[in-house]
Image 1 (spheres, one colour):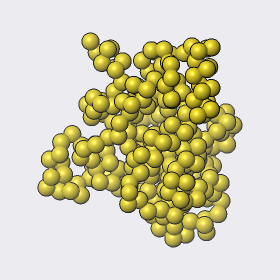
Image 2 (tube, helix red, strand yellow):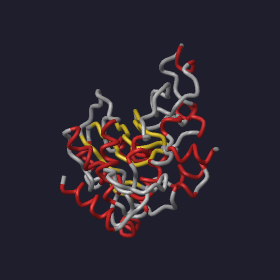
Image 3 (cartoon, helix red, strand yellow):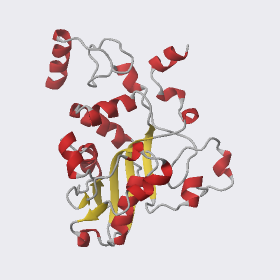
Image 4 (tube, helix red, strand yellow):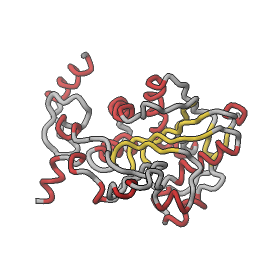
Length: 261
């Protein structure tokens, strides 16, 4: 209540526009975004890979074979058992993640955490939540780990502890986004370690991340955890990269259609 009043007052004194559609913000409840654009962020639906939940182009992909996995999962079996990434990595969510992650707008953590909480499967079972760690050098530059901020919002929802000191990144590698697909796996080899391996023995671990792209980072985390005795590792991410043709129109903000006309 107080936060909403202060937000409205600040917008009267310091007018600002929606990051996505550039319309003036008034009584919109989400920082930096208008109500209309934010409500266009809708979960992905439809047929998908049963392991990584990559969307399939057609329902026929799993009509006769419900366990049919995508090409990547079939040809290079991942170490994680499941990935849940509920939203397409496209505007306005992509804009919000960029503000949150790269511009330090941590005021978006609650709103993004709420989006993530909506997509948690009802039958998800886990013992420990672990955010994907940053190397200390990158953490010093960014001053926070965006995955930890998300995990802190999901822990109370699942009533499970968040372990953020055990799994660590020991190699300061080049950002995955700068590398071709063939080099990403090698780039992360032995990049992660556990400070207290005994704490994960027999445990079901849920890795928390902001964006799932190729899955190379979480796969290497999963490998490290399984080699230390974890029972299984699953992944919960806020968004996932998908082919442009797989993004439903309902997930795009009005500004996207304006640009197409």
